[in-house]
Image (tube, rainbow, N blue to C red; front, side, top):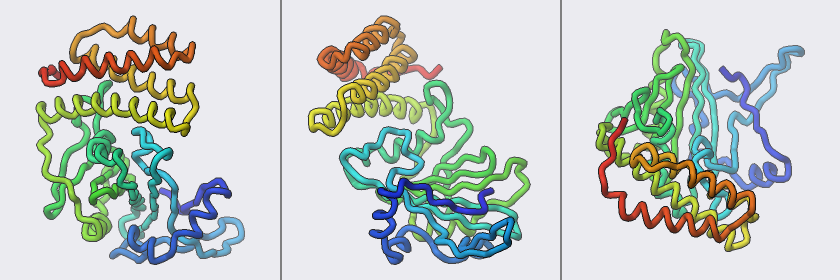
Length: 295
């Protein structure tokens, strides 16, 4: 359990960000009060000197928060993430909150897909056996009970993430905090039935997203926002995922294709990789309507 929230920034970037965000704006994203038995942390004690200091109690990060690993870009839009923690002496639970404001760019069309991606398991993200879709007072959210509890949902283009740790499953859920944030940010996710049909469609959407990411990287290269090798490396990584999915669900060997892509990357052969991307997109458009078998 974290006792102190530490703001970690490179000075040149963090100081302007903190100066631009006013207290009234922070209240649009975080609850800066105690919530029932859960206390909003506003002070810290030095373990050596016992000196008590007041702290802001929240962190502001320039970035997409827990969706950072999904391929959002800082090159064409700016996401902002707000973090806060509450603690309860009664339940002995610390609850971490993260509210990410996404910019409303074209990448936001993948937000629901990417929120769900964080709960999927398997080598090919093919199932959600360790998580479930949950209804709390009419709000549909994603939930996992591994190691405690993780609750995540959308409020339009905001992503709300709540987590707490309880390795031995001996504590009550921090429902006071969860309900407070659901009241502030009602879920805009419609009910989802997690079944084989849904899993199949999610996988097909992930293939779509990977090919879309490749196009986005080439767009940034054309606009002079990224270097050639960095672009080709990102495109190559996404195409390898595409080839893995195609091998798994359409039984098309990927060895020779991956070997060719690796050679093009080493040679920085942009045109050859672009041609491969167009070839894969053409194949996918012809085959995406075909059923796949989840194994």
